Length: 267
Image (cartoon, rainbow, N blue to C red; front, side, top):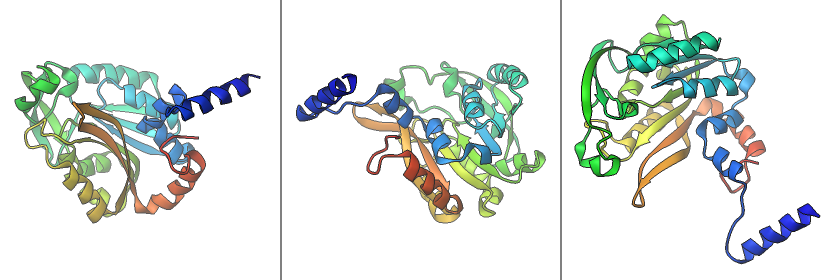
């Protein structure tokens, strides 16, 4: 009886030009971490880098989805790192590292903004204050230790990274430049990267050039974008998943099992 009622409601809405979807399905299908748990075989994911880990919420989520993986959580901002470090003591497969990823090894200045979640090694572009109010306003600046991804992998004896997640507030291109050895030797399976389409940070680089760089030079394939942020109809930023060609065939098999044929919605 209940199924008949549901079918009647769905058919009626379709006839009126509406589509009925479960809210949980809509949310999970736009969650790149949940999608990664469907694309990859969780038992086969061994190493994850969470760069721009903040207070560790993403690392915790990744730990739940991939319980056998070692998660390297990298965060340069000391107050965030302190919380992240405490979390790593409670969750066995998370290790916390007080660093910033860059294209060089050394030290740099981290801008501390009014909204600390927007902290960046780059200066904010105040042309975008109309979008973010004064959240990007710099209130302090501290010195932080920087490392390349190649050096980090060598120091931590990481042979392969199944997932690299980058949320570096415009500094993603520099971090990718510092991973040339890993990328040239096909040591990265999947990249989940924040892509900023407007010049919110000075010198952040062109997002299309970054994705093309990964596709053309390092044989990644663009998969999809998630959690899009708009301002008055214009796309401002999103999270992109790119998959290395060596992993794509196996992942595509999982796609066939997990997604509707002509939709981003999960089964």
